[in-house]
Every structure is written in structure tokens, then in C-alpha cells.
Length: 379
Image (cartoon, rainbow, N blue to C red):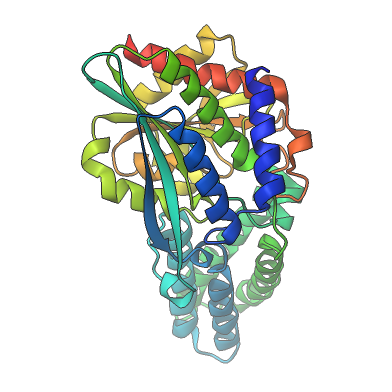
């Protein structure tokens, strides 16, 4: 079988045997054990990298910001304008720090769980002088009804909502000097309605199998790892990494903190959603305020050119990846993100993200890219 068939067989087995793999679930743990066994067949060393997190701090914090906004709106109508300003400003701060920068300000309000990354190391033929990481994540997401249906068009709801919250906060403090009620009161009502819509449709309790996001990515780096193990680079140490906890963005945050010294001279190449029409080599991830390494981008670009992949180079305005936690700490990293022609990943956070919908050709090409990246770096 070819690379694509091998990856789909792997994805199908994991989905059938272990089901959805929500952070900290039995499915995630069992899938991790299986991936660990697979890596042990071709890596020189394999380790489980355990960490503790509170996953729902990333997905469910929005209810706290919604309640702050509603309370602020009520206080404005009763004349407590300064309290409205404080509550709305606090909600904005939580959004930026909790969602975009992953500061975990309110994670303590949510239940704790334990997860593990799987790290397999492949040593070169001679003395290691360089180090790269080929990675993907094996946890799967909740269904995101709003984002899954609207895809990148969800920005037409979310961006105006953010603007309404920010303007409402400013108008609340302005009310001490000018009568802005004719603008502010309708704005507060509109903001409340929009926030309730977004909060109630951001995620459901239904679970996606995450075949493309991102179990196929794990299959890609496993296939690349098998090849690299049999045709070892001369001086490049290769880590094959299956990350847990990407769907709450705490997993790689823990990994970077723990292994920072080892990662200083390494380059991360992360693979996301490889069943695609084309690959985006991400120069930045706007949602997470992350600028990726020009060095990593150039290496990925060269690899894509060599294997004649259909790719683009540019910013990722929609969604995000594990590479963000590397780049924000000044480490070299980028993501090779598979997208459909409309600019969003196929079946992203939907119940339709199943093995039978995977595209063999693009997955095979993703494996070729990963292998070629190791060659380019070794040169």
C-alpha cells in the first residue's frame, strides 16, 4: 500500500477501536497507548510526556464573558455606567488572555484532567548536529456548530461581536461626559443577543471523530518516521511527536515549558488536516498572535517545491495550531495546514470528519513533504 492508504488504515483503526478522543478521555488515553506502540517499532527511543490541564477553560470560558456582558448591560440600564465599563473590559481581557494568549486566568474554575504526548526519537547515522520535530495531534474536538457550518464566514459574526463589546465598554465610560444612550442601549441589546448565539452554538456536547483534524496528521508523521528510520539522515535528529491537548491549546504550552532548552536549537514542522485541496505554510496565526519562523517557512516551502505539492505561503486567519505555542516563545516553528479551496479545513469540528472522507492523494503528498523536510534540513 502507498502512504495515503497506510494513513487511512491507521485512522480507520483508531476511530473504530477508540472512538472520539476528547482531552483526558479514555479514548484519548487508549489511542495514545496505541500510537506509543507503533512508534516503538521504528524509533530509537519513545517516551510519554505527561501533563495536567483543565481543557474546558478553553472552550467554555465564553459563558463567563457572556455573563459579564449581560450583567454589565443590566447595570448600564440602571445607571451604573462605570461598573458596566469594568465588567465589559474584564470580559474583553479574559477573551484576549484566555483564548488568544492561553494565559489560563480562569482555568481553575474547570475540572482537571491528565494527558500525555508521545515523543519518538530517531537518531542520525553520524553525530547529531541538527534537530527537527515532525508533529501532529491525536486528540479530537467537540462539534462546533457555528464554526463548522459557517467555516471562515463565521468571522462575519465574531469580528463584529468583538467590536460591539469594545465599543460598548468605551461608550460606558463616555457616558459620564456625553449622553450616548441612543447608541449604547441598542448596542448592548445587540451584543447580548449575539453573545448568547455564539456561546450557545460555539460547541455542542456531540463529539467529532477528528479523522482529518488531526488523526490523519498523526498518520502522516508516523509514515514519515518509518521512512526516515530506514533511510536515516546524516546529522539530523528527528523527533516524531503526537501531541495531546491541541483542542484546548494547553498541551504544547506544557511541552514547550518542559523542554525549552532542548527546543532552542530545534525546528518544529507541525501537520494539520492533511486531507486537503492545498497546503498552507503558515507565516503567522492571527487568532493566537503568533508569528512563525521565516527559517522554518523557507524549509517547508523548499520541501513542497521539491515534491511538487500544491501549496501557498501566508498567514492563517482561521483556526490555529500547536506551532503557535512554539513561535510565541521565540522557537523556530511553522504549520503545514491542509485547506479546502474556500480557505478552511475540510469537515473542521463537525460530525462529518470521518475516515471514509479522507483524500488519499493529499495525505500521500503530506508524507512526502515531511520526508523531504528532513532531507532539506540535513543538507
